Length: 442
Image (cartoon, rainbow, N blue to C red):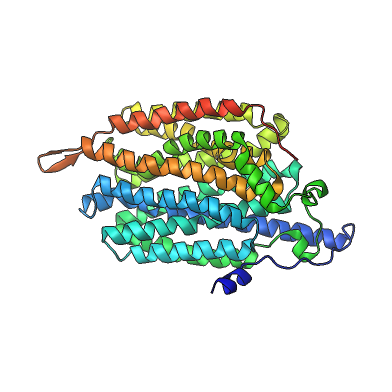
């Protein structure tokens, strides 16, 4: 079985290079490059539909007595821990495998898990399968980043990384609006079922339109010859990533950022319903404002740093870090006001969108060998999602312990959890300044 899987997911053999000055070769290069880019962008966006379905369904599940807040936190943390470990392991694998098959498989299995959970109410089933969902979700990011580094050179990489990263905002917006409507109209089970069906179709899209590295088709490589022909092996370059202290400082900064990012994504709908009295649909629409704003921030973050900061990410990361902290504090501490909550989520989304690019991967990719970009992303990912997972456990415990029953109805207190969410933004901001002058070894 192992030999079969190793053979099935092995990289395609290299093809003899063709004349790069041939117009037909250039046309084919552009076509395959754009096809690969659109496949990872839309494909990864729909990965989020199968990752956030549980977040939208939380309040409905709690109201139905399926799980309490602490149990919801434990289940939610399972996906983050598995995803973080998987992002490291599968990031290492992404440097070595056929990314088309790898990325399509991850989404297909994630979709099957969502479909299965749409027919279950057992805590153990949810805990185990939601953890498995995290593992297969981790197939997406590494495959996408490796695809970008193989199809785009250093002058374009930041721009297209930023545009690709906006896919998570697209997925969040679709989930917070579409899944919220499904849950409100048909119940929480259908939220999982519809997510599964949609993502099965998307996995087929990835399978059809994602292409491997250019060299597999005889096309010119986007990786500089000095890097790709280095005497160091891929394993040595990956090991250098884990020996780089700047990578781990970025990992801690990203972990703190992910505490708040996923606190709002995981508990935001619950918070708006329980603390501010909004309906599920309205709460989903408010959360979607953060995702829509994030699309623009993510899309332009790479362009901004490439064109106006000469490829440096530090100053824009600091600016968007401040915006992120302000938006979080406004959202958590402000009274219930529809327009104010929308505005807070717009600021939050702008911060998340840009920091997802800078702290979530690009700054680490910049300071590591491009032949080990999957490893760099994996190192950041494992730290980030440990932070997100610990957050979900702590948030669930804080929310559950502060809850009281009044006239037979559970009333939730978010004061302690809210301070955790705000404090994490400040820690992230401070840590990111410690790697101000880190440089690439290439």
